[in-house]
Amino acid sequence: MLFTVAMCILLSSDSRGQGPPITSDKPIMLGSKRKIVKTLTEIRKNNNGTFVYAPLMMHYLPTANSLIALHIPLLSSSITRNETTEESMGLGDINLLGKYQFFRKDGKGKTLRMVAKLIETIPTADNVGLSDFGLGEWQTYLAHVIGYETIKHGISHELGYKFIPNYSDEIKHKIGFGLPLLKPVYPVKQLNLYFEYNSNFFVDNGAYELFFAQGIQYAIKQFTFETAVQLPLVQHDIPEEIQRKYSIFLGTRYVF
Image 1 (cartoon, rainbow, N blue to C red):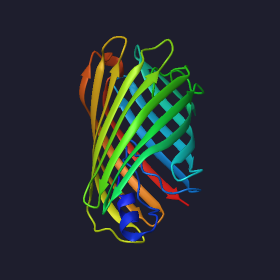
Image 2 (image 1 turned 90 degrees about the horizontal axis):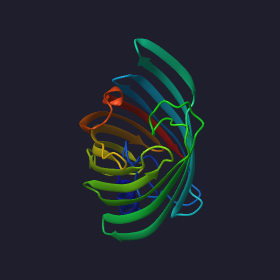
Image 3 (image 1 turned 90 degrees about the vertical axis):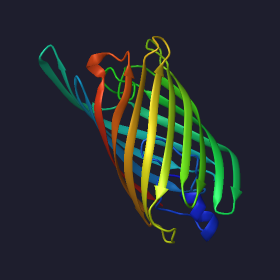
Image 4 (image 1 turned 30 degrees about the vertical axis):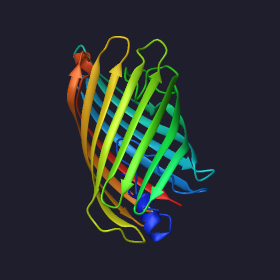
């Protein structure tokens, strides 16, 4: 999750293969002029159908403390309504992302960092009734992300607010814990376990959902490979037809 900078501190070199938390975000920047190409496909099974969200994510760091990104997803859905199944495949909602690191405090083998984050969602997908995939609405998400990392563990925390016209706004909260299974080396070769909790509170009606994800990530040199399974813990006042059964995440990343 947040072990990249710890290795940078200890080894005086940028870590190129280590990835962020799988289902949440990180405040760690990899250095100016770096480029990242990644994907994190989600296969989501709800009561009313199955969705496959496969984004191509292109990130660029203009400076050591800023990042801009473009996410272009492919969205496949199979939704059952009144014993009829509707299938579709096409472009998902495009996301424009910006992050700025406004706080950094490094110590020996540890670091604490904070970033501000903005995501603007362009409604290019069909309306599938899910804010993460497609609602037919412009959406704006503002958040802050805090991360603390040592060579033995990493902790990340994100709190944000999503504005959605004509739908309920959402308060999003994410917290993740990372555990490296191998000693830090350079070039990077690491195996990490992740324990991540994601929650959504719907402002208009007070509905609430909480999910737990167990993930594993393998990083080698400039490449990262990861997978996670996400399960619901709480789904309070969530419409039964869109309640989640599980999600499976499959991701890769290349840094250059």
